[in-house]
Amino acid sequence: MTCKAMPATIKENLIKVTNPATGEEIFTAKATSETEIKEIIQRAKESFLLWSSMTVDKRIDYLKKIYELIIKDKDKIAEIITKNTGKPLSESYLTEIASCLQIMEYFIKKGHELLNEKSISLGKLYPTKKSFLSYEPYGVMAIIEPWNYPFYLPMSAITKTLLAGNTFIFKPSSKVSLVGKLIYEILLEAALPQGVANIVYGGSEAAEVLISSGIDKVIFTGSVEIGKKIAESCAKKLLPVSLELGGKDPAIVFKNTNLDYACEGVLWGAISNCGQACASIERVYVESEIYNDFIDKITSLVKELKIGNGIDDEIDVGPLIDKEQVEKIEEHIKDALNKGARLHTGGKRIPGSGFFFEPTVLSNVNHSMKIMTEETFGPVIPIMKFESIEEAIRLANDTRYGLASSIWTGETGNVKNIANKLNCGTVWVNDSLFLQAHPACPWQGYKDSGYGGSAIYDFVRTKHISIDLGFIPKLHPKSFWWYPYKGKARSYSDLIGIVFKSSIKEKTKAAFHTMINFLK
Image (tube, rainbow, N blue to C red; front, side, top):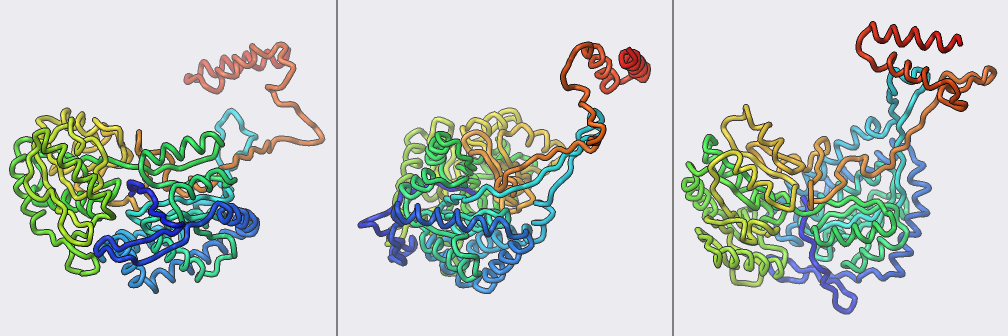
C-alpha cells in the first residue's frame, strides 16, 4: 500500500498538521535540524551494538510489549489516525491497526524460524562440503514512510527492523506527523533501550540528510518520482535501498462473473481510503457484453456511499489528504472529459472546510487520458470495455506500473493462465486490496512500482559459510581442483561424465577412464 508522497508544509521551521475533514490544526512539530539528525544517527549507531547482540528471544519480548500496548490503546490510536488522515474509523481499525497486529503476531511467532541459521545442500559434486546461511542485521535503518497508511506501514517496517537486530530512524510524512509522534510514544512506553528507536520530523530535506549521513539501508514507501530520486542518491553511495512505489492497478471483469459481487468488490477496491492507496483499483476493464450493466450497477452503488468526517461511524468515505490532492484529481477528470469521457456521477469537490470529493464514475475512457495512465490517487472509477481475453491482458499491461491487478470471473479454471500474463507482483482473483498486509505473502512491484519487498530478508544481510568436513589436518590432502593442473584435464572431463551424464553405461565408462587416469 504505497502512496503519492507530498511535499512538506514547513513554515518558520514548524510542521503544521491539519485534520483534512475540518481544516482544524491538530498538531505542530518542530522540524528536526541537520545537526540533530546527525546526532540521532550517531546514537542509533552506538545503540546498535547492544541491540544486535541481544538474542532473538529478547527482541521478541520487546515486540510483545509493543503489541500489547497497541491492543490496549487501539481506540485512541484509531481516533488519532482518523483525525490526522480523515479516513473512516472502520478503516483505521481494519486496515491500520488490525493489519499492524497481524504483521506483529506473525513475526513474534515465526521470528526464530525465519532467522535461525539454515544448512543447504551443495549436491553430489561436493560430498564433503557443508554450507550454512546466517542472517545479520544491516545496522542503522532509515524508515521513510508516507501519509496514506501512517500507522500500518511504519509499524510493519519497524517490526521487521527490530526483530532483525537493526536500530532505526523513522521519518513520517509531514502530513501525518501526529501519527508519527503516536508511534514513537508507543515505542518509548515499551522501554526499548535508548537510541534503538528514533524519530525525525521534516520533509525531503530531512530525508536527504538521513541518506547522506552514514546510515546502512533505506526503506522507502512513496511515489515513483521521489523513489527515483532516493534511488539515485543511494546509488552514489552504493547504499542498499528498498522501494515500494506507486501503482495504476487494473481490474478485469469478465461477463461470466457475478455482477453484484464484482461491482461491490471493485467499488471497495477503488474507493477505500478515498482511493488513496497504491493498490487501489484505478482502471476497470469490463467485457463488452456486461459493460452497460456494470456501469449502471456500480454508479448506483457509488451514489449510496455516505461521505463525511470519518470520526462518524456511519461514514463510508472520508476526505482527501489535502488541497493539492483535490486539484490533481480535478485535473485528471477534466482531461478525461475534454477527450470524450462520459461522467455518470460525482466529479466535483464538495464545498466546505474539508477536502471532500465526490466519488466518481467515468466511462468511454481510453489510454490517451491521464485518468488511465497516471496515478490518480482518488475516488475515481474509470471504466473501459474489452472484447477478448487478449485485449484485456494487453490493456492491463499497458502501463509503466506493475504493482497489483484483480480479475473478476465466475470460472476459475483458466484464471491462473491469465494471471501469469499480467505484468505485476500480485494478482487477486475475485478480491482486491487483500493480503498485501499478510507477512506470509510477498508484496513487491514490477517496473516503476519499485523493488525490494516486505519479507524479513529485506532487513538482514545474508552470510554464506562453507566448511570442508573432509579436511583431516594430519593428512593435509589437497583439493582435486587445486594446482598443478598438469594432466588433469582428461580427469575433469571424465568427472563431468560421472556426475552429469544420465545413462548408467556412460557413467560407468567415465568412471573407468577416471580410474585409469588416477592409476597413471
